[in-house]
Structure formats: C-alpha cells, structure tokens
Image (cartoon, rainbow, N blue to C red; front, side, top):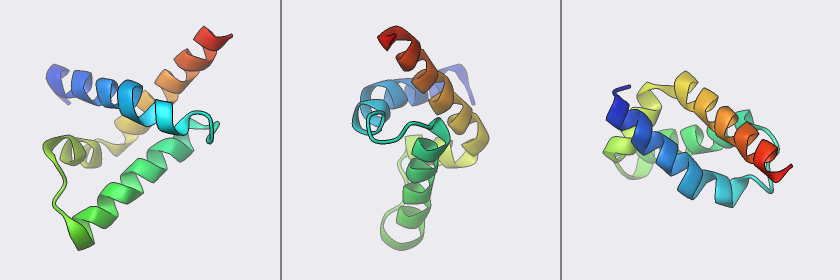
Length: 79
C-alpha cells in the first residue's frame, strides 16, 4: 500500500470499523474478516468496491494486521 492508502485505511479503521465493532468483537482477526467478507460479497453480487474497498481486498493480510494493531492500541488506551 502507498502511504496515502495506509493513512486512508487507518482512518477507516479508527473512525468507522472500531467504534462499531470493538465492543462486540474482541479480536481484530474477527473484525477484519467481517469487513473483508462483506467486501467480497458486495464485489460478487451487489456493487463494485470503492477505491478503499479495493485497497483492502488487495492487501488483506496487511489490513488484518492494521485492525489488530489499532484494536490493541484502543485496549491499551482504555486501560
């Protein structure tokens, strides 16, 4: 991923993914799998992914690692 793509993905994780999913799911692996599976389904059946979605699909392992790192950071901050 380029630096700008990394920043966009990190912002998506922090602003959109974790606020909705962090309380319900304790593992970043589960959260990232939900996002990736949703993107795959939309790509097949409903809509083309956005540029952000395409970046996530093309970098699934890195996305998972980023979600896990941000979730860990959130847990450290909370205490």
